[in-house]
Length: 208
Image 1 (tube, rainbow, N blue to C red):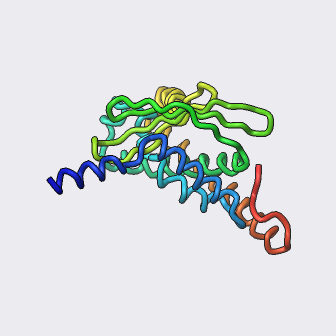
Image 2 (tube, rainbow, N blue to C red):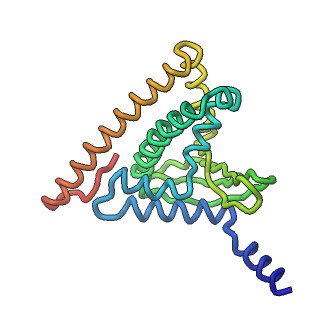
Image 3 (cartoon, rainbow, N blue to C red):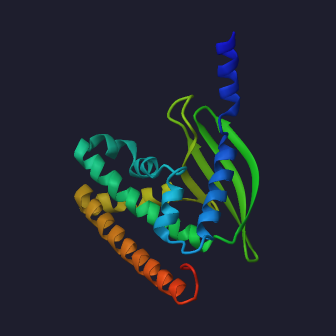
């Protein structure tokens, strides 16, 4: 009886999709507004609740994913994770002052959607978060963000299909590695600029 009560208590305390999105957004805004905030410091916070590897896998598609060797999967996942975390964090810094209003939570098995509205200056932007969990006992993690009805997964999927059709997988991977290197170089430059401004009494962190 004690064991069943304990299990029920743990189940009740498990974070819901809405809780995951709320706490994640709160952590991101706190990190983005911290003195000396950088894309790298923010990316470390973001990847605690966003599953970039799952996002990359879904964007590539099951058919292509299953055709890859373990080494190719590892290389692709690492490249896309690096690209996505830098891109996601860079965007989050630009939205650090946004007001977020939370709507409904929809759960269907191991998939869920949380509706929000982002108010940035005078613009109101609908942002839906799609989450999943590997098993019934796993934690909910975000794998897709739909901004104004545009899905991040679908956007990448369209780009991937074009590149796969013209360059093949090796060409796709090479293109992604180049984009990742460029983005990380830009972020490093922004971080250095932010650190310099902070040291001289200027802006504490980079902004967009």
